[in-house]
Image 1: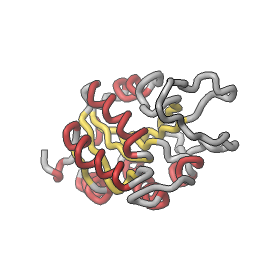
Image 2 (image 1 turned 45 degrees about the vertical axis):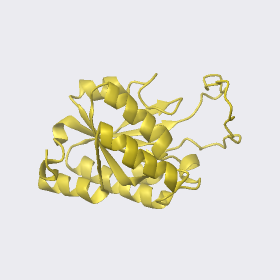
Image 3 (image 1 turned 120 degrees about the vertical axis):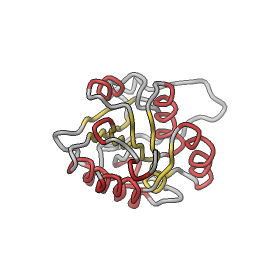
Amino acid sequence: MSDKSLFNLERTALIIVDLQQGIVGMPASPHPAPVVVSHAAQMALGFRASGGLVVLVHVGPSPDGKDSLRPITDEAAKWPSLPEGWDTIVPELGPQPEDVVIRKRQWGAFYGTDLDLELRRRGKDSIVLCGISTNYGVESTARDAYERGYQQIFVEDACSARSEEDHVFAMTRIFPRIGRVRSTQAVLEALIRR
């Protein structure tokens, strides 16, 4: 499939991962969080204007924290106590009434959520994926989508990680093997061409 017909809008959803107050406030590389948010917001606007589906994913534990993962690891997660509003989706993204909002409790957006059900019932078999962090939330969601048979487009300049090295590894070594890596501009142009 050429970029002239990058995706079929009727069968494609834009999935935006973890662009929420607490995460966009952390350092991001190689693209600063405001750039990632701006690019995701442009794509969301384009998808909505074209009648496409936007899925906003955010992460956070239940109020008592008892649903958080607690694996025995060599490197403990260094999470500070989470302030109120940490899991609130950034205002640039909405949500709008027609969006699907998914709350997850771990890195990936499929396990333990209704994401697969929401997509399949709407006839979606392709996803455009972006967000922070490239090698955690986005990659975990991408690997799960691959195993479920979804076609995928990864928007390089609408993703970022904690380090440029982590971002580049996912974009050059993982994502090209399970989908296609494109730019925000390529996605927007595909929306205009339809």
